[in-house]
Length: 185
Image 1 (tube, rainbow, N blue to C red):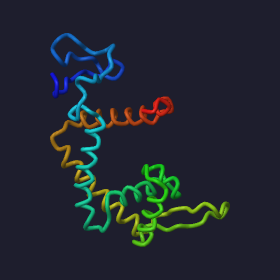
Image 2: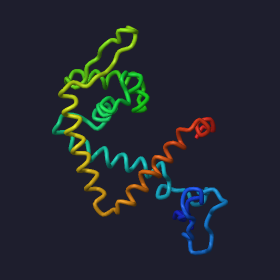
Image 3: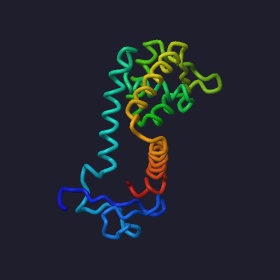
């Protein structure tokens, strides 16, 4: 089976075990991956990266008429939803280094989509806020993103999409947990 990924079921803690190979093995007590069957087609990291690349290319082309990139829109969304109120918050939320985030905010400010205001209680803190035009462009691009995703998922059942979202959220929480980061994963 060299070069081809063997499909295995997820551990019983996640979903009902299935016999995916037709040999009675339900892989409950084994690691999911082995060195022999690990490859791009079954690698979560590779699949996530390719999906991200496809989505970014698709949305970048849609957002071009608004004059912004997916990265810029992601920053606006972080501020819009209250996930980030400072450059440091935004840097963490976008997983960008602080220098890249500062340059990103500089561009957003030059476009008239974001303002920076010093906090009155701590002059070292610079708060970020969307301008009226920043909110408007964020909403217009949100609508484009909704249409994009609905088009991409047109052949999916609602339950499949909901399950995918739940599994992705669970994986993100697992990867971000202190015990996982302590292992260096």
